[in-house]
Length: 119
Image 1 (cartoon, helix red, strand yellow):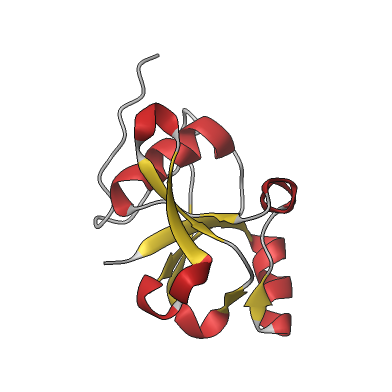
Image 2 (cartoon, rainbow, N blue to C red):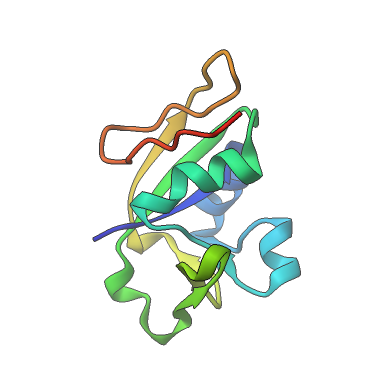
């Protein structure tokens, strides 16, 4: 099982140089890096990153993250993975650029279930 984090391309370039991803400004504000499961990430992108260009889908192997990774309730009681500390890039499985469709929705790889937003 993989977990996912949405990262801006510029932030990811900084992480690659440092060897760790410290999170976004929102992550710093909240005190943890916001991750999603495969079934959560498309909805998270829609709700929080709609229309954002140069967004990357970073897939992470959660097994090596240890106790810093906590699954905590969020929207509607769903458990979301939160990482309390930096993400070492050694745990990254893949990094995929996300393009946008005409409605500003990100196009995800086949492993991610689609999210149908009611508009």
